[in-house]
Image (cartoon, rainbow, N blue to C red; front, side):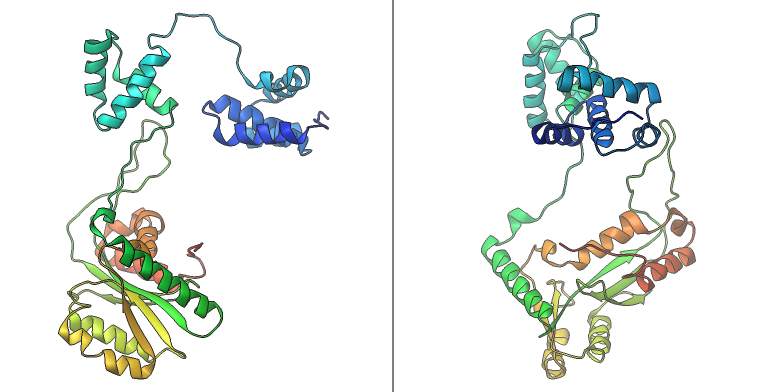
Length: 331
């Protein structure tokens, strides 16, 4: 058996950092091999974990024992000099900040301004090498009142602390719609092949729900439009299930702020149910948004989109098993 029996704390920290953060996958993998060997794992186990041959594992360990950290890196290879210098790569990084969506424009500017004729694939490699990525996010932050947001956040945290002490319950309320036009998720698949999900127009399945941080959920499913009467009926039903003073965090949707909805606040207060409205443009504070995201992007199977009945069954199955098979880890 071949094991590494001795590593200093500094070496171990360096290896852990290389395993997690080094931009070259081969270096990450080799650092992982050394750590596993130091932890007493047999070569055959390391082969399975790291996906390399026994010979490669043995060579990595030998290199470490002979030359230490340098053994993680490939020796310089012969070949033509790179077309792009470090200054060119820095120029590309600056261009990405100015024009993050158009690689074609960067290729044109490189040739016009710096005399470097390269392909789009070369520019992509530079971008990936610098650990940049393509996805952007929508945000409502510029529209909201930051002071009101922070005040609401503090109030919710205070309520959650009281909930932990058993004084009150805190739930989050919202609704979401599901139909046969799927949210396009990320999914691992063989290179050159694509998982295809059929999209179709269909009626809409609306779900309203009360959820807390203990993964308890009271859902209500409808195939009709959601108006104030529907929301009021859900609050009336939920108010009959509470056993202590209960606060419900909800947003400022028109049906929540309608005169008809607000006219019921007094009756709900008498039952111990207290709706608390969030400031405008503060979806991050309504934790039930995480539930809808998980359902649409992770939990709903592709088969759910084959028919509306299958969609209803799949949504119902998730909601029924939420808290057991389907769990959200709240920080």
